[in-house]
Image (tube, rainbow, N blue to C red):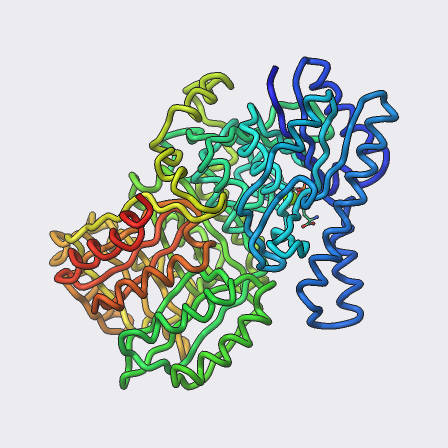
Length: 596
Ligand code: ADP
Ligand code: ASP
Ligand code: MG
């Protein structure tokens, strides 16, 4: 007898007819001899409605009371679902997060799951009942109700599947799978047969709202096989598992984060420890940051920019105001008129020219790139919000994502299940998991050092469409392979473009960089002896404390960081080559040896 977790999102339970249809899907599984745990969201747009009621009263409502309020949406659905199942002749029981024993930390609106007790669910399943769990909620140690963040019912579902060692976790939603991008924005987006945990985690974290990114962390950590499928058809969905759909494609999908905000701290003192202090404040406030870029220093001062989600913009403004005073910076600015577009793919690691293709696509549509940040499996560009949809379509077309892959049959379900259980390479080792104190604790798998890199910065480059495309075209013509790329926000319409290359390319790249600077009146700064340190794991970007701990460990060891790249599975920093070994040893001590 298999155990299946089925999750139904808001549109799938938007009215009582849909609730009955979802109930029938669960009964169908039990008739096939399986046990079923259902996880449900609030009906339709109920969570939005509850939030708007609170906002009618206060612009900054109390966060504990917001969680109390928002959790009521799911409570309505679980009761109606139990009533629906019983009306169809099946035994059922509904549970709130507290009743199942979903224990979380006390971070209202973004709580993380610490533990789940399965006894009560097992008892009810043993009595032949369908268990219906409220998604998106838990309780902290003082029994305060907490919520997991918008879209968090996916995380409840996958976490329950992990705790119950379920055979499958089916996510029923209003699309019939994971597409190469949001099919509502790009109608010719293609449905993927399967996608790897790392790619889905990165796409979700970068804005692909089809899955809550934290649910994929659970799936990867505990080897849960997830299937995304439609509530309204029986079409096969997309399997999220250890394997990518294809090994030979550089990009599997493009995500749009429409609601981003760009925070810039102007005139921060350029000395060791300042950046660490800055990011500590944002980590303490549990605000995840992305696209971190620093302008080159002038008169001992530098501008530091990074992005946050618009939801966090108000809180980020408060933190930035305090930070400016504490670190003695000049001022801060929050621009809420930006959007982020990210191309993601495991194949990117092995192929060159991917970033260049994306910059070209944007240039051809006349879109100006305000910031660039790359990491191992993604390239992100920050744009004006008005350009976002056009940019998404252009990048999707540039990588021909609408085209069906030609050869190689997709794997069967049983092959994928075997991979999910057996593979350590794309999952997490059981040894690391057994050392976790909370289910949702961050997992670090290792620290790597590449001490054969050189860094170039093109300073004061004119900030206009096509510049990044031109720079990386010329470098590609010279056959140099670029690793990390960061383009920072410019003052006075001037930007900085920083990138790293393998050290043996240095002479060729220097000539190219000099040529570009001559024709655009900018200047080149380079450091031929840098090293890249990377911490590998999963959920690294959104576990806000991790990047800070990394900077602190390096800062305490006297190591200065010049470039930062963030993804969910990898945080990379560039340091001077003589600091590479000590940095690696101390990061290893901080993150890896401590857990083992
Ligand atoms: P639910 O309420 O079922 O959780 P969501 O609205 O959270 O549903 O997620 C489904 C929506 O995600 C789709 O309607 C689609 O517009 C959006 N979406 C964004 N990116 C993607 C993608 N890459 N593939 C499929 N859907 C996507
Ligand atoms: N109801 C919550 C929300 O709208 C959780 C969820 O649907 O996943 O964000
Ligand atoms: Mg959702």
